[in-house]
Length: 381
Image (cartoon, rainbow, N blue to C red; front, side, top):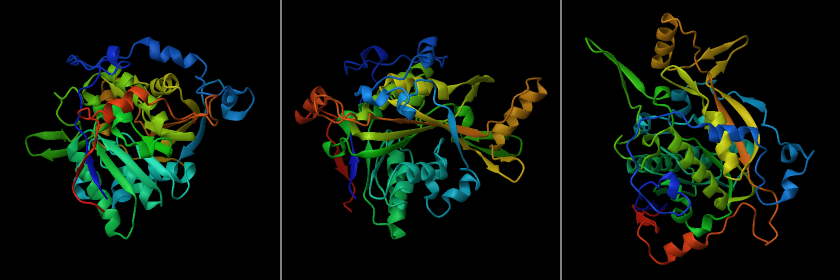
């Protein structure tokens, strides 16, 4: 196994996203996304490369309506701690937004075959990678914060200690620079992407109770809040723009017909529900992807007659306080899993539908541009 670090670049502003230039991002408060992205939900899905992929009456390819909720994933029959027991190092606990391992297992099992490549452009502690290799797949991830790169490698090392001889790598860098960050060997190779955008500190974190101090919340924020290159710190509307850019770049590395599974949940800001799943659906369409499924991954155990909620203490406490104040809120008991795919056919020029033109991006790497070439770190497998 070889570790890779790439020098991080500052985040591009929305205006410069298409040109690749960089500017400082203003430190501005979170605000609701304008209507423009959500209005796009009423528009038909964007054709990717081949009109044959959007032929009317041909199943998901010809369905120009919003994808229905076609499946419920029972991904919380065991709590998160039990799902990670003995397969993740203790340092993983501190990450503010760990993906449920069972969500990844379901996606990897359903959308890939053994030996295929699974990618996560914001891999955190490496949940996607760990579950993929434990299911016999290859894996590659990108992570912005160097501490979590180390933790992801520790989790992959743990899998190797358990006898899993895997092919998995982690690259350190900004996923918005994905096209210049990952080596050419991954172009057009991924069968599946499983990822989740950073969102809603109110949905994350842990709590402790100390005498005289009451309930204290911790591990609910990403990195240094002053780091404006980190997606969670740049405001909701810029987060959507950045995630659209990431989704667009992923087409370079997905094979034709490859899938992207994005797990997100609605969350509350000042008690107001933010419909992030619908906004991410609009982002996927803007990135030229074809939406094919909208699933529900339960955050509650499905019992014989009802659901047993697994919400955290502070989430339950928040709901209780809001109800006492007269606002009849309910505990969020699921995540949406939006599934997109690339086109199934090659375009007229003969190139794969899921692979974009790399011209200007690859030229900067070949010229030795700072931040484009991964720097090997650590030990070889």
